[in-house]
Image (cartoon, rainbow, N blue to C red; front, side, top):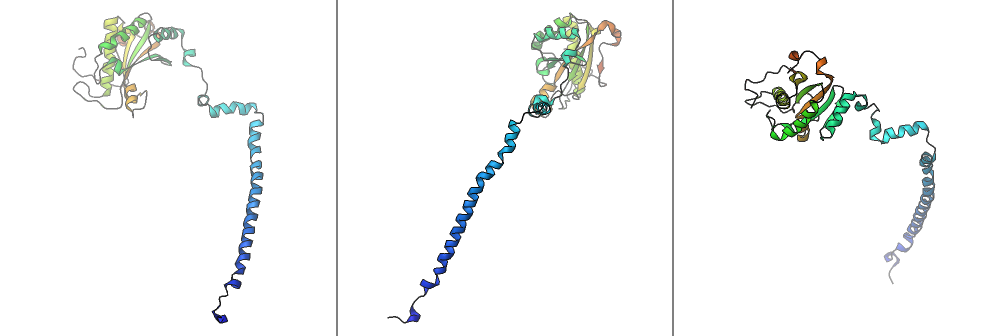
Length: 257
């Protein structure tokens, strides 16, 4: 038999751990029970606000304000359309040209027909391509039946041009407008007294110039049909052809090719 001082005393020394673990277990169960009991009450407390918002009858002011917040089209203030305020003469011209599938719209300055560069001219040139002649002929057939004055406005993109023929975009835009004037008057019989040429260069973009598609949209010639007959305007010798928006000096190279 071993002496007493050789015997271990673990049996009595660790018994308090049992009671301690029992207390912790009871506390854990207690807090879990409290949390489980309070969760349904929390879920029931939050819905009334949304339920009230959905079930409460909407006032006229709130009903009118909701579309303005949710509908992107409603964010634009309602205004009379340009067509509604346009003169009847321009509306008749637009109706005729709309059958040709052209890009046209009415503005304060008149009926605008936008012809892309890709339709009319090769890149960097002012020579009207043969594929554009049927389109110009259709437009000229409508213009011949009305007395309105016509503005031919050349536009370019923001990429500078400099070659043997054109020093900048102003000259290129003006030359393209003059080319279209020569075609309308020389080939389709539109009186020069009704025609005016302007160049906007790259300063009236139709789309942003930071993408190829945007720059393609900006390279264009606009035919603006003004709501005024040529007979009521200033004499023909002071009208045709005028290059406005800049002092454009075209190269000495003959324009006719």
